[in-house]
Image (cartoon, rainbow, N blue to C red):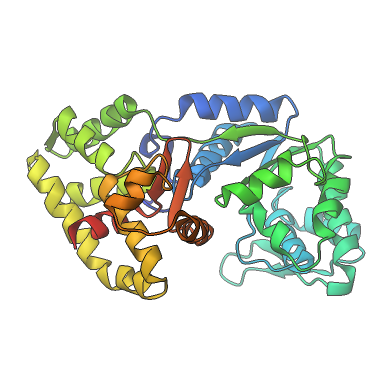
Length: 375
């Protein structure tokens, strides 16, 4: 067995190969078209809907071209410009060009502020780079990295994941600094994506912000149910298992078509090896997963107010609530004054315990929703 052929084809982390990636044909084509035509993209969706997988899948489509280089930079744990530049440098340097000793030495000569260190892998003898960046030189280092990509003979594509983190840096100049450099680049295009939708959207649709109207906005929704069933059914058939369409649709609707949660249960169902996947088996597996996470969900409830907990339970029972301040909803669930509920709901959305969608409010974590319904 190789890394290209996992034991369980319902892969939950990372990107392996196209055959383990479900659908997203329209989204992939749209993203690739924008990049190839020189447009930067802002990719927005709830957490665990599949943004990162779509990026890696799109990059997989681009990589066979010899004059293309793709870079994925996760900004989730960065806290300022210095951390961002170090992550970007560590991703780009030594990967933009072939890892020959001559190229590495050229890289060393290009940078004045980064202090890249030429290394050799003791096991393989392959040349590599480690990067040391002075915090005082971070701004100039960023300029050097972008200049390095701009002068490359390869077309560069950079995906900044959790890009809304930049808006939370203590140094509020970083957003404008990035924009000032990015708008000058002609050989580099960017994907800006994140899961805190309101923060990310505000960065690109608010007139006073540096990135205002500088990208093509793209929202990632659920995978098409029919395409998802065809994908899952084929993988189950290859394993000697059968899942009828109505059973899949039951699971799909139960978890609100939220990609990672649906895929998690499909992974567990595959693990059972049961020849026939029934609705009862789906319910058993979902309950098992919920029980595994019960201690975490109990902690969630302990960290919020009583009113917030009652709101979560009320929303979970309804699956989706179009208007939480509706008088009938408030009265039926004994939630009290609308003003107090409004404040509590805002807090729950900020904590990413409630998800606000075009269709209404839902519990963000689909397994937590099931916990609130079952216990």
